[in-house]
Image (cartoon, rainbow, N blue to C red; front, side, top):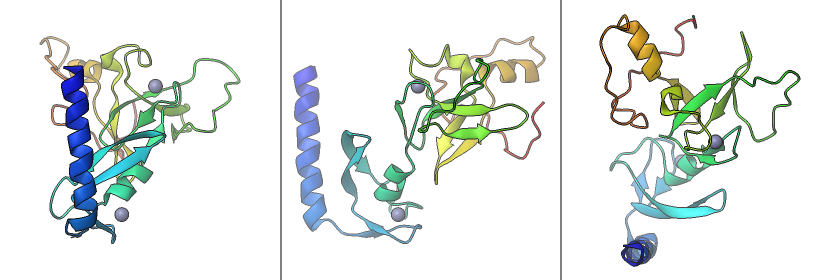
Amino acid sequence: MRLLHKLRTRWEKIQTTVYQFLGRNYKCGCGHVAKWKTVLTVHGDSGVFTLPSRKPDYCSQCWAEAAIKCAWCEGTIVPGDAITLYTPSKKGFNVPEHAVIYRHEPHLQLVGCLRWNCADTGVDRTGFWIMPGKVQRAMSPIEELMARGGTEPICVNNVTDSQEAILISDETPER
Ligand SMILES: [Zn+2]
Ligand SMILES: [Zn+2]
């Protein structure tokens, strides 16, 4: 399986190189032009980025530039990733330079990732990191449960999938 994956990755890279030279340019909403597939390096990790549509809002480069680091483990968070918005529990906590602050008030909230060794559990998913580099709040599974009066069991198959999440507007005052 691993070899297959390696071969597939290599094939994708070759394909991408071809696109890089011969592929047509797609005009993106951000004003840049991008190829259908691009090899991108984000914080030292490279992968192949495919445009989400033929008329994308953002190019691959803008997407890569919107990537941030998790406040807690420094893991990469790219647009589309599920996030946590934890508040540091330690008094006199020094916000690391790489951290992204979601809110200062009423308490400090930092953008974190949902890697298994970083977030405590999947129920801490409180939003998504979206283009052009901002937080889209979503109800966490616990909030969903409370919103329904806590009587019905909820079934969330994949907390990292924004299609399954109940998105909430940032303008809604926090309770
Ligand atoms: Zn762009
Ligand atoms: Zn993390």
